[in-house]
Image 1 (tube, helix red, strand yellow):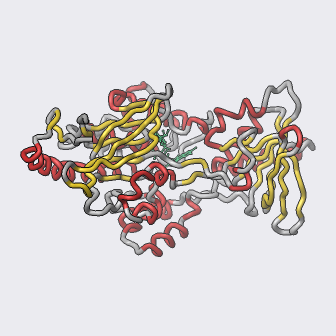
Image 2 (spheres, helix red, strand yellow):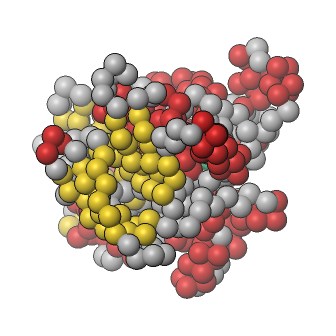
Image 3 (cartoon, protein in one colour):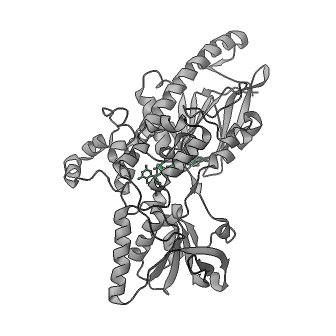
Amino acid sequence: MHRDTVFDLIGIGFGPSNLALAVRLAEEAGVSDLAHCFIERQPEFGWHRGMLLDDCRMQISFLKDLVTMRDPTSRFTFINYLFERGRLADFVNLKNFYPTRVEFHDYLAWVAASFDDRVNYGQTVTGIEAVRSTGHTNEVAALRVFSRDHEGREWQRVTRALSVGIGGGPQVPEAFAALGTHNIVHSSQYLTSIDRVVGPASGARKRLAVVGAGQSAAEVFVDLTRRYPHVDASLIIRSSALKPADDSPFVNEIFNPAFTDVVYAQPRDGRRALIERFRDTNYAVVDRPLIEQIYEMLYLQNVCAEPRHRLLANTAIETAMRTGGGRIELTLRDRLSGHARAEHFDALVLATGYRRDTHVDLLEGLAPHLGDALARGDVERDYRLVTPASFKPRIYLQGCCEDSHGLSDTLLSVLALRSDEIAASLAHHALQDRTADRTSRTQANATSAGRMSYAV
Ligand SMILES: Cc1cc2nc3c(=O)[nH]c(=O)nc-3n(C[C@H](O)[C@H](O)[C@H](O)COP(=O)(O)OP(=O)(O)OC[C@H]3O[C@@H](n4cnc5c(N)ncnc54)[C@H](O)[C@@H]3O)c2cc1C
Protein backbone atom coordinates (compact mmCIF):
# COMPACT_ATOMS: atom_id res chain seq x y z
CA MET A 1 0.00 0.00 0.00
CA HIS A 2 1.27 3.50 -0.80
CA ARG A 3 -0.17 6.98 -0.75
CA ASP A 4 -0.35 9.41 -3.67
CA THR A 5 -0.28 13.17 -3.66
CA VAL A 6 -3.59 14.18 -5.11
CA PHE A 7 -3.84 16.93 -7.71
CA ASP A 8 -6.77 19.33 -7.64
CA LEU A 9 -6.80 19.25 -11.44
CA ILE A 10 -5.16 17.39 -14.28
CA GLY A 11 -5.69 18.72 -17.78
CA ILE A 12 -5.53 16.15 -20.55
CA GLY A 13 -4.21 17.68 -23.76
CA PHE A 14 -2.48 21.05 -23.92
CA GLY A 15 -4.05 22.69 -26.94
CA PRO A 16 -5.66 26.14 -26.82
CA SER A 17 -8.49 24.96 -24.50
CA ASN A 18 -6.32 23.81 -21.62
CA LEU A 19 -3.77 26.52 -22.38
CA ALA A 20 -6.49 29.13 -21.80
CA LEU A 21 -7.34 27.36 -18.55
CA ALA A 22 -3.68 27.34 -17.49
CA VAL A 23 -3.58 31.10 -18.02
CA ARG A 24 -6.79 31.56 -16.06
CA LEU A 25 -5.55 29.47 -13.16
CA ALA A 26 -2.30 31.44 -13.05
CA GLU A 27 -4.05 34.81 -13.09
CA GLU A 28 -6.90 34.27 -10.67
CA ALA A 29 -6.28 34.70 -6.97
CA GLY A 30 -8.07 31.84 -5.23
CA VAL A 31 -7.35 29.22 -7.88
CA SER A 32 -3.67 29.84 -8.50
CA ASP A 33 -2.83 27.64 -5.50
CA LEU A 34 -4.70 24.64 -6.89
CA ALA A 35 -2.31 21.76 -7.43
CA HIS A 36 -2.56 21.18 -11.15
CA CYS A 37 -0.69 19.93 -14.18
CA PHE A 38 -1.33 19.08 -17.82
CA ILE A 39 -0.43 16.03 -19.89
CA GLU A 40 0.22 16.53 -23.60
CA ARG A 41 0.97 13.87 -26.18
CA GLN A 42 3.15 16.04 -28.43
CA PRO A 43 6.80 16.53 -27.46
CA GLU A 44 6.30 20.31 -27.39
CA PHE A 45 3.46 22.76 -27.86
CA GLY A 46 1.86 22.51 -31.30
CA TRP A 47 -1.45 23.77 -32.72
CA HIS A 48 -2.64 21.76 -35.75
CA ARG A 49 0.90 21.52 -37.06
CA GLY A 50 -0.21 19.20 -39.86
CA MET A 51 -2.19 22.09 -41.38
CA LEU A 52 0.16 24.95 -40.61
CA LEU A 53 0.24 26.10 -44.20
CA ASP A 54 2.32 29.19 -44.88
CA ASP A 55 -0.27 31.70 -45.97
CA CYS A 56 -3.49 30.43 -44.36
CA ARG A 57 -5.22 32.92 -42.15
CA MET A 58 -7.15 32.68 -38.91
CA GLN A 59 -10.90 32.46 -39.23
CA ILE A 60 -11.37 34.46 -36.09
CA SER A 61 -10.32 37.92 -35.00
CA PHE A 62 -7.06 38.13 -33.06
CA LEU A 63 -9.13 39.85 -30.35
CA LYS A 64 -10.60 36.44 -29.60
CA ASP A 65 -7.24 35.25 -28.33
CA LEU A 66 -6.85 33.26 -25.11
CA VAL A 67 -7.68 36.13 -22.75
CA THR A 68 -8.82 39.46 -24.23
CA MET A 69 -12.56 38.78 -24.07
CA ARG A 70 -12.40 38.37 -20.30
CA ASP A 71 -9.42 40.56 -19.43
CA PRO A 72 -7.86 42.85 -22.04
CA THR A 73 -5.25 43.85 -19.44
CA SER A 74 -3.80 40.33 -19.17
CA ARG A 75 -0.16 40.00 -20.14
CA PHE A 76 -1.13 37.06 -22.40
CA THR A 77 -3.05 39.06 -25.01
CA PHE A 78 -2.17 38.78 -28.69
CA ILE A 79 -1.42 42.50 -28.60
CA ASN A 80 1.13 42.07 -25.83
CA TYR A 81 2.64 39.17 -27.78
CA LEU A 82 3.08 41.51 -30.76
CA PHE A 83 4.51 44.17 -28.49
CA GLU A 84 7.04 41.82 -26.91
CA ARG A 85 8.00 40.45 -30.34
CA GLY A 86 8.54 44.04 -31.56
CA ARG A 87 5.89 43.82 -34.29
CA LEU A 88 2.96 45.79 -32.89
CA ALA A 89 3.33 48.85 -35.12
CA ASP A 90 3.91 46.75 -38.25
CA PHE A 91 0.91 44.57 -37.44
CA VAL A 92 -1.29 47.66 -37.19
CA ASN A 93 -0.12 48.68 -40.66
CA LEU A 94 -1.45 45.40 -42.04
CA LYS A 95 -5.00 46.61 -41.23
CA ASN A 96 -6.10 43.01 -40.81
CA PHE A 97 -7.93 41.36 -37.91
CA TYR A 98 -7.00 37.89 -39.15
CA PRO A 99 -3.34 36.95 -38.61
CA THR A 100 -1.84 33.99 -40.44
CA ARG A 101 -2.15 30.67 -38.64
CA VAL A 102 1.64 30.54 -38.51
CA GLU A 103 1.68 33.77 -36.50
CA PHE A 104 -1.17 32.66 -34.24
CA HIS A 105 0.69 29.41 -33.62
CA ASP A 106 3.71 31.45 -32.59
CA TYR A 107 1.46 33.46 -30.23
CA LEU A 108 0.05 30.28 -28.65
CA ALA A 109 3.55 28.79 -28.28
CA TRP A 110 4.71 32.07 -26.69
CA VAL A 111 1.94 31.78 -24.09
CA ALA A 112 2.56 28.06 -23.59
CA ALA A 113 6.25 28.69 -22.84
CA SER A 114 5.19 30.36 -19.58
CA PHE A 115 3.66 27.09 -18.41
CA ASP A 116 6.46 24.64 -19.24
CA ASP A 117 6.78 23.62 -15.59
CA ARG A 118 3.09 22.64 -15.51
CA VAL A 119 3.02 20.50 -18.66
CA ASN A 120 4.17 16.93 -19.04
CA TYR A 121 4.92 16.92 -22.76
CA GLY A 122 5.45 13.70 -24.71
CA GLN A 123 2.96 11.68 -22.66
CA THR A 124 -0.26 10.21 -24.04
CA VAL A 125 -3.06 9.61 -21.59
CA THR A 126 -4.16 6.03 -22.12
CA GLY A 127 -6.88 5.57 -19.52
CA ILE A 128 -8.57 6.77 -16.35
CA GLU A 129 -9.53 4.67 -13.37
CA ALA A 130 -11.75 5.38 -10.37
CA VAL A 131 -10.11 5.65 -6.93
CA ARG A 132 -12.52 4.71 -4.16
CA SER A 133 -12.72 6.49 -0.83
CA THR A 134 -11.20 4.65 2.06
CA GLY A 135 -14.01 3.15 4.08
CA HIS A 136 -16.79 4.09 1.60
CA THR A 137 -16.86 1.19 -0.78
CA ASN A 138 -19.21 2.76 -3.30
CA GLU A 139 -17.89 6.28 -3.28
CA VAL A 140 -15.42 7.34 -5.95
CA ALA A 141 -13.18 9.99 -4.40
CA ALA A 142 -10.59 10.65 -7.10
CA LEU A 143 -9.32 9.56 -10.49
CA ARG A 144 -6.13 7.82 -11.46
CA VAL A 145 -4.77 9.04 -14.79
CA PHE A 146 -2.52 6.67 -16.74
CA SER A 147 -0.16 7.95 -19.39
CA ARG A 148 2.68 6.58 -21.50
CA ASP A 149 5.73 8.51 -22.64
CA HIS A 150 7.74 8.17 -25.85
CA GLU A 151 10.06 5.61 -24.28
CA GLY A 152 7.08 3.44 -23.38
CA ARG A 153 7.25 4.24 -19.66
CA GLU A 154 3.93 4.25 -17.77
CA TRP A 155 2.97 7.15 -15.51
CA GLN A 156 0.17 7.42 -12.96
CA ARG A 157 -1.24 10.50 -11.28
CA VAL A 158 -4.25 10.96 -9.00
CA THR A 159 -6.58 13.93 -9.22
CA ARG A 160 -9.90 15.22 -7.95
CA ALA A 161 -10.78 16.90 -11.23
CA LEU A 162 -10.04 16.45 -14.91
CA SER A 163 -10.20 18.94 -17.73
CA VAL A 164 -10.43 16.95 -20.93
CA GLY A 165 -9.26 19.10 -23.84
CA ILE A 166 -8.10 16.56 -26.39
CA GLY A 167 -9.62 18.13 -29.49
CA GLY A 168 -11.10 16.05 -32.30
CA GLY A 169 -9.89 12.81 -33.83
CA PRO A 170 -9.63 12.33 -37.61
CA GLN A 171 -12.99 11.40 -39.12
CA VAL A 172 -12.35 8.74 -41.75
CA PRO A 173 -15.41 7.56 -43.71
CA GLU A 174 -15.89 3.80 -43.64
CA ALA A 175 -15.14 3.31 -47.35
CA PHE A 176 -11.59 4.60 -46.77
CA ALA A 177 -10.95 3.14 -43.32
CA ALA A 178 -10.91 -0.35 -44.83
CA LEU A 179 -8.05 0.65 -47.20
CA GLY A 180 -5.48 1.31 -44.48
CA THR A 181 -3.19 4.31 -44.41
CA HIS A 182 -0.76 3.67 -47.28
CA ASN A 183 -0.95 6.77 -49.49
CA ILE A 184 -4.11 7.88 -47.70
CA VAL A 185 -3.58 10.92 -45.52
CA HIS A 186 -6.07 12.68 -43.27
CA SER A 187 -5.77 16.46 -43.52
CA SER A 188 -4.64 16.61 -39.86
CA GLN A 189 -1.43 14.85 -40.98
CA TYR A 190 -1.10 16.71 -44.28
CA LEU A 191 2.18 18.58 -43.81
CA THR A 192 3.84 15.77 -41.89
CA SER A 193 3.03 13.10 -44.50
CA ILE A 194 2.46 14.61 -47.92
CA ASP A 195 6.10 14.80 -49.10
CA ARG A 196 6.52 11.09 -48.50
CA VAL A 197 3.26 10.32 -50.29
CA VAL A 198 3.88 12.52 -53.31
CA GLY A 199 7.53 11.67 -53.78
CA PRO A 200 10.23 13.72 -55.51
CA ALA A 201 9.40 16.12 -58.36
CA SER A 202 11.86 14.20 -60.56
CA GLY A 203 9.57 11.15 -60.39
CA ALA A 204 6.47 10.29 -62.40
CA ARG A 205 3.40 12.55 -62.48
CA LYS A 206 1.00 11.79 -59.64
CA ARG A 207 -2.80 11.97 -59.53
CA LEU A 208 -4.10 13.02 -56.14
CA ALA A 209 -7.69 13.37 -54.98
CA VAL A 210 -8.74 15.60 -52.10
CA VAL A 211 -12.02 14.52 -50.54
CA GLY A 212 -14.15 17.09 -48.71
CA ALA A 213 -15.87 20.43 -49.24
CA GLY A 214 -14.70 22.44 -46.23
CA GLN A 215 -11.94 24.90 -45.48
CA SER A 216 -9.24 22.25 -44.98
CA ALA A 217 -10.11 20.54 -48.27
CA ALA A 218 -9.87 23.82 -50.15
CA GLU A 219 -6.59 24.76 -48.45
CA VAL A 220 -5.02 21.37 -49.18
CA PHE A 221 -6.19 21.49 -52.81
CA VAL A 222 -4.58 24.88 -53.39
CA ASP A 223 -1.44 23.84 -51.56
CA LEU A 224 -1.03 20.71 -53.71
CA THR A 225 -1.36 22.73 -56.89
CA ARG A 226 1.31 25.16 -55.72
CA ARG A 227 3.72 22.90 -53.91
CA TYR A 228 4.08 20.07 -56.43
CA PRO A 229 4.51 20.76 -60.15
CA HIS A 230 4.20 17.01 -60.82
CA VAL A 231 0.83 16.59 -59.10
CA ASP A 232 -2.54 16.71 -60.85
CA ALA A 233 -5.08 17.39 -58.12
CA SER A 234 -8.82 16.74 -58.07
CA LEU A 235 -11.07 18.17 -55.39
CA ILE A 236 -14.08 15.86 -55.03
CA ILE A 237 -17.19 17.32 -53.41
CA ARG A 238 -20.72 15.93 -53.08
CA SER A 239 -22.35 19.34 -53.13
CA SER A 240 -22.96 21.34 -56.27
CA ALA A 241 -20.45 24.08 -55.42
CA LEU A 242 -17.91 25.20 -52.85
CA LYS A 243 -20.02 27.30 -50.50
CA PRO A 244 -18.82 30.39 -48.60
CA ALA A 245 -18.73 30.45 -44.81
CA ASP A 246 -21.30 32.87 -43.45
CA ASP A 247 -19.28 35.26 -41.30
CA SER A 248 -21.63 38.20 -41.63
CA PRO A 249 -21.92 40.28 -38.44
CA PHE A 250 -25.42 39.33 -37.24
CA VAL A 251 -24.75 35.66 -37.84
CA ASN A 252 -21.35 35.97 -36.18
CA GLU A 253 -23.14 36.87 -32.94
CA ILE A 254 -23.70 33.15 -32.40
CA PHE A 255 -20.00 32.99 -31.51
CA ASN A 256 -20.37 35.64 -28.82
CA PRO A 257 -19.70 34.08 -25.43
CA ALA A 258 -23.19 35.18 -24.28
CA PHE A 259 -24.77 32.97 -26.95
CA THR A 260 -23.64 29.90 -25.03
CA ASP A 261 -26.37 30.67 -22.47
CA VAL A 262 -28.94 30.97 -25.24
CA VAL A 263 -28.06 27.53 -26.64
CA TYR A 264 -27.76 25.88 -23.25
CA ALA A 265 -31.19 27.15 -22.16
CA GLN A 266 -32.89 25.31 -25.03
CA PRO A 267 -34.33 21.81 -24.73
CA ARG A 268 -32.30 19.12 -26.52
CA ASP A 269 -34.26 19.48 -29.81
CA GLY A 270 -34.02 23.26 -29.70
CA ARG A 271 -30.24 23.11 -29.31
CA ARG A 272 -29.93 20.77 -32.26
CA ALA A 273 -32.17 22.99 -34.39
CA LEU A 274 -30.09 26.08 -33.54
CA ILE A 275 -26.86 24.30 -34.45
CA GLU A 276 -28.32 23.08 -37.74
CA ARG A 277 -29.58 26.58 -38.59
CA PHE A 278 -26.06 28.01 -38.29
CA ARG A 279 -24.11 25.01 -39.55
CA ASP A 280 -22.90 26.92 -42.59
CA THR A 281 -20.75 29.11 -40.38
CA ASN A 282 -18.34 26.26 -39.74
CA TYR A 283 -19.02 23.00 -41.57
CA ALA A 284 -18.52 22.18 -45.27
CA VAL A 285 -17.92 25.85 -46.07
CA VAL A 286 -14.90 27.80 -47.25
CA ASP A 287 -13.73 31.39 -46.79
CA ARG A 288 -14.91 33.41 -49.77
CA PRO A 289 -11.44 34.71 -50.83
CA LEU A 290 -10.18 31.12 -51.02
CA ILE A 291 -13.15 30.12 -53.20
CA GLU A 292 -12.37 33.01 -55.51
CA GLN A 293 -8.72 32.01 -55.61
CA ILE A 294 -9.62 28.44 -56.62
CA TYR A 295 -12.05 29.66 -59.25
CA GLU A 296 -9.42 31.92 -60.79
CA MET A 297 -6.77 29.20 -60.71
CA LEU A 298 -9.06 26.77 -62.57
CA TYR A 299 -10.05 29.50 -65.01
CA LEU A 300 -6.43 30.40 -65.81
CA GLN A 301 -5.64 26.76 -66.49
CA ASN A 302 -8.23 26.85 -69.25
CA VAL A 303 -6.62 29.95 -70.72
CA CYS A 304 -3.40 27.98 -71.07
CA ALA A 305 -5.37 25.01 -72.47
CA GLU A 306 -3.59 22.65 -70.10
CA PRO A 307 -6.12 21.84 -67.41
CA ARG A 308 -4.43 19.69 -64.75
CA HIS A 309 -6.43 20.38 -61.63
CA ARG A 310 -10.15 19.79 -61.33
CA LEU A 311 -13.07 20.50 -59.06
CA LEU A 312 -15.46 17.54 -59.34
CA ALA A 313 -18.74 18.86 -57.94
CA ASN A 314 -21.95 16.85 -57.47
CA THR A 315 -19.76 13.79 -57.15
CA ALA A 316 -20.43 10.95 -54.75
CA ILE A 317 -17.67 8.46 -54.01
CA GLU A 318 -19.47 5.14 -54.05
CA THR A 319 -16.60 2.71 -53.56
CA ALA A 320 -12.88 2.88 -52.94
CA MET A 321 -10.52 -0.04 -53.50
CA ARG A 322 -6.83 -0.78 -53.90
CA THR A 323 -5.60 -1.80 -57.32
CA GLY A 324 -2.18 -2.93 -58.56
CA GLY A 325 0.87 -0.91 -57.55
CA GLY A 326 -0.86 0.54 -54.48
CA ARG A 327 -3.10 2.83 -56.54
CA ILE A 328 -6.63 3.57 -55.43
CA GLU A 329 -9.70 3.16 -57.60
CA LEU A 330 -12.69 5.35 -56.79
CA THR A 331 -16.12 4.79 -58.24
CA LEU A 332 -17.50 8.26 -58.75
CA ARG A 333 -21.19 8.87 -59.40
CA ASP A 334 -22.38 12.12 -60.89
CA ARG A 335 -25.27 13.01 -58.59
CA LEU A 336 -27.12 14.89 -61.33
CA SER A 337 -26.85 12.54 -64.29
CA GLY A 338 -26.60 9.33 -62.21
CA HIS A 339 -23.68 8.26 -64.40
CA ALA A 340 -20.91 6.29 -62.61
CA ARG A 341 -17.28 5.94 -63.67
CA ALA A 342 -14.02 4.59 -62.19
CA GLU A 343 -10.99 6.81 -61.74
CA HIS A 344 -7.53 5.90 -60.44
CA PHE A 345 -5.41 7.95 -58.06
CA ASP A 346 -1.93 7.57 -56.60
CA ALA A 347 -2.99 9.01 -53.26
CA LEU A 348 -5.89 10.56 -51.37
CA VAL A 349 -6.08 13.39 -48.87
CA LEU A 350 -9.16 13.02 -46.70
CA ALA A 351 -10.30 16.43 -45.53
CA THR A 352 -13.32 14.76 -44.02
CA GLY A 353 -13.40 16.51 -40.67
CA TYR A 354 -13.04 15.47 -37.05
CA ARG A 355 -14.84 13.16 -34.61
CA ARG A 356 -15.78 14.85 -31.38
CA ASP A 357 -16.35 11.69 -29.32
CA THR A 358 -12.79 10.61 -28.58
CA HIS A 359 -13.26 11.56 -24.90
CA VAL A 360 -15.76 8.70 -24.62
CA ASP A 361 -13.01 6.15 -25.35
CA LEU A 362 -10.63 7.92 -22.99
CA LEU A 363 -13.14 7.81 -20.12
CA GLU A 364 -14.27 4.26 -20.87
CA GLY A 365 -12.69 2.91 -17.68
CA LEU A 366 -15.10 5.07 -15.67
CA ALA A 367 -18.21 3.93 -17.53
CA PRO A 368 -19.41 1.57 -14.75
CA HIS A 369 -19.44 4.53 -12.34
CA LEU A 370 -20.93 7.17 -14.61
CA GLY A 371 -24.32 5.79 -15.60
CA ASP A 372 -25.39 6.83 -19.08
CA ALA A 373 -24.39 10.52 -18.76
CA LEU A 374 -21.26 10.00 -20.85
CA ALA A 375 -23.07 8.33 -23.72
CA ARG A 376 -25.91 10.87 -23.56
CA GLY A 377 -23.51 13.82 -23.41
CA ASP A 378 -25.16 15.26 -20.28
CA VAL A 379 -23.05 18.23 -19.30
CA GLU A 380 -23.72 21.03 -16.80
CA ARG A 381 -23.51 24.66 -17.88
CA ASP A 382 -20.04 24.82 -16.28
CA TYR A 383 -18.89 22.00 -18.64
CA ARG A 384 -18.95 19.38 -15.89
CA LEU A 385 -20.04 15.94 -16.95
CA VAL A 386 -23.17 15.00 -15.00
CA THR A 387 -22.16 12.27 -12.54
CA PRO A 388 -23.97 10.26 -9.84
CA ALA A 389 -23.84 11.60 -6.25
CA SER A 390 -21.41 8.84 -5.22
CA PHE A 391 -18.93 10.01 -7.88
CA LYS A 392 -17.07 12.93 -6.32
CA PRO A 393 -14.42 13.91 -8.91
CA ARG A 394 -15.33 16.53 -11.51
CA ILE A 395 -14.77 15.95 -15.21
CA TYR A 396 -14.80 19.11 -17.32
CA LEU A 397 -15.21 18.61 -21.05
CA GLN A 398 -13.84 21.16 -23.51
CA GLY A 399 -14.37 20.98 -27.24
CA CYS A 400 -16.85 18.11 -27.15
CA CYS A 401 -19.93 19.96 -25.89
CA GLU A 402 -21.18 21.35 -29.19
CA ASP A 403 -24.53 19.58 -28.74
CA SER A 404 -25.18 21.31 -25.41
CA HIS A 405 -23.16 24.55 -25.61
CA GLY A 406 -23.29 25.42 -29.31
CA LEU A 407 -21.08 25.78 -32.35
CA SER A 408 -18.42 27.87 -30.63
CA ASP A 409 -17.51 24.94 -28.38
CA THR A 410 -15.02 23.40 -30.83
CA LEU A 411 -13.54 26.78 -31.79
CA LEU A 412 -11.43 29.47 -30.20
CA SER A 413 -14.30 31.98 -29.81
CA VAL A 414 -15.24 31.27 -26.20
CA LEU A 415 -11.93 30.05 -24.79
CA ALA A 416 -11.26 33.09 -22.62
CA LEU A 417 -14.70 32.95 -21.00
CA ARG A 418 -14.96 29.16 -20.86
CA SER A 419 -11.71 28.95 -18.91
CA ASP A 420 -13.14 31.56 -16.54
CA GLU A 421 -16.29 29.51 -15.99
CA ILE A 422 -14.34 26.31 -15.40
CA ALA A 423 -11.91 28.04 -13.04
CA ALA A 424 -14.85 29.44 -11.02
CA SER A 425 -16.38 25.98 -10.80
CA LEU A 426 -13.03 24.46 -9.78
CA ALA A 427 -12.58 27.07 -7.06
CA HIS A 428 -16.08 26.47 -5.74
CA HIS A 429 -15.63 22.68 -5.56
CA ALA A 430 -12.05 22.86 -4.27
CA LEU A 431 -13.36 24.82 -1.30
CA GLN A 432 -15.92 22.08 -0.66
CA ASP A 433 -13.20 19.42 -1.03
CA ARG A 434 -10.98 21.13 1.48
CA THR A 435 -13.76 21.38 4.00
CA ALA A 436 -14.49 17.68 3.47
CA ASP A 437 -10.76 16.91 3.73
CA ARG A 438 -10.50 18.60 7.07
CA THR A 439 -13.31 16.42 8.36
CA SER A 440 -11.82 13.23 6.89
CA ARG A 441 -8.35 14.11 8.09
CA THR A 442 -9.54 14.26 11.63
CA GLN A 443 -11.20 10.90 11.12
CA ALA A 444 -8.61 9.07 9.07
CA ASN A 445 -5.41 10.99 9.79
CA ALA A 446 -4.49 10.50 6.16
CA THR A 447 -2.54 13.52 5.04
CA SER A 448 0.31 14.15 2.67
CA ALA A 449 1.92 17.57 2.18
CA GLY A 450 -1.25 19.24 3.32
CA ARG A 451 -3.37 17.44 0.75
CA MET A 452 -5.71 14.51 1.12
CA SER A 453 -4.32 11.11 0.19
CA TYR A 454 -6.12 7.94 -0.70
CA ALA A 455 -5.05 4.46 0.17
CA VAL A 456 -4.64 2.44 -3.02
C1 LIG B 1 -6.53 23.42 -39.48
C2 LIG B 1 -7.43 24.00 -38.45
C3 LIG B 1 -7.59 25.38 -38.35
C4 LIG B 1 -8.43 25.92 -37.39
N1 LIG B 1 -8.57 27.27 -37.36
C5 LIG B 1 -9.42 27.81 -36.47
C6 LIG B 1 -9.63 29.22 -36.45
O1 LIG B 1 -9.05 29.97 -37.23
N2 LIG B 1 -10.48 29.72 -35.53
C7 LIG B 1 -11.14 28.92 -34.64
O2 LIG B 1 -11.90 29.43 -33.82
N3 LIG B 1 -10.97 27.59 -34.66
C8 LIG B 1 -10.15 27.02 -35.55
N4 LIG B 1 -9.98 25.65 -35.57
C9 LIG B 1 -10.73 24.81 -34.59
C10 LIG B 1 -9.85 24.21 -33.48
O3 LIG B 1 -10.56 23.16 -32.91
C11 LIG B 1 -9.48 25.18 -32.39
O4 LIG B 1 -8.72 26.18 -32.97
C12 LIG B 1 -8.60 24.64 -31.25
O5 LIG B 1 -7.54 23.88 -31.76
C13 LIG B 1 -9.33 23.87 -30.17
O6 LIG B 1 -8.42 23.66 -29.12
P1 LIG B 1 -8.40 22.35 -28.20
O7 LIG B 1 -7.37 22.57 -27.19
O8 LIG B 1 -9.80 22.10 -27.72
O9 LIG B 1 -8.06 21.17 -29.19
P2 LIG B 1 -6.70 20.87 -29.99
O10 LIG B 1 -6.13 22.11 -30.52
O11 LIG B 1 -7.03 19.77 -30.94
O12 LIG B 1 -5.72 20.32 -28.87
C14 LIG B 1 -5.89 19.07 -28.26
C15 LIG B 1 -4.55 18.63 -27.70
O13 LIG B 1 -4.72 17.43 -26.98
C16 LIG B 1 -3.64 16.54 -27.26
N5 LIG B 1 -4.12 15.18 -27.00
C17 LIG B 1 -5.07 14.50 -27.66
N6 LIG B 1 -5.25 13.28 -27.10
C18 LIG B 1 -4.40 13.20 -26.05
C19 LIG B 1 -4.12 12.20 -25.10
N7 LIG B 1 -4.78 11.03 -25.06
N8 LIG B 1 -3.16 12.43 -24.17
C20 LIG B 1 -2.47 13.62 -24.15
N9 LIG B 1 -2.71 14.60 -25.06
C21 LIG B 1 -3.67 14.40 -25.99
C22 LIG B 1 -3.30 16.82 -28.71
O14 LIG B 1 -1.97 16.45 -29.01
C23 LIG B 1 -3.52 18.33 -28.79
O15 LIG B 1 -2.35 19.06 -28.54
C24 LIG B 1 -9.14 25.08 -36.51
C25 LIG B 1 -9.01 23.69 -36.61
C26 LIG B 1 -8.17 23.16 -37.56
C27 LIG B 1 -8.04 21.66 -37.66
